[in-house]
Length: 204
Image (cartoon, rainbow, N blue to C red; front, side):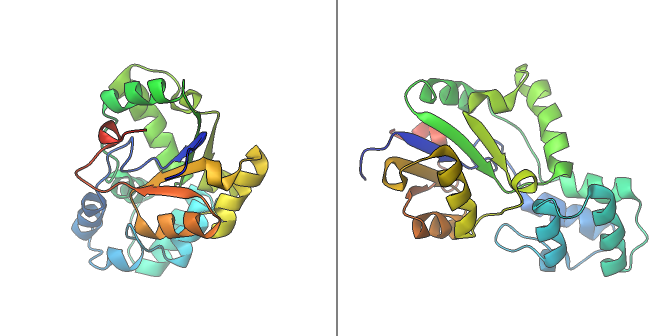
């Protein structure tokens, strides 16, 4: 690996523990037994793509989800099940990040949505006692805010262009292989970080 000056981190599976099976089970308990046809770690249906690129609001998403599933669920039921995958922020990873951002220019790029964002902002404070997760980065990029989603190469190019980064000097760290492939397509250096390994074990 070449020397790098910048790091772009993923969020879920890197700093925030997530479990897609918990959301699948939560929807199964509501009577939706084919949730993985809508969303998995590696796949998003058109509706979920629109949610994660900010093209539908949470309210519009819930309405469309009811229509697509034929289930008369309340917004609260849908949102609670959707948020079930969000687990915890291990505080030692945040302390590690605070040391890393003294040595590198550090960014975040997360595929997420307003429903999850609103939930994990609150849980970050409750679990760590720290007020602002985004302040750990020069800039945090969220797919629903920029209208672009991993693994599409243009999403990475957007960050490269806005921050005037040299791809060969920039490292991207993610737990999903498709996202790693998208980053490589624009010339970024990459680390595919897979469970049970965590950022605490990286030698940067």
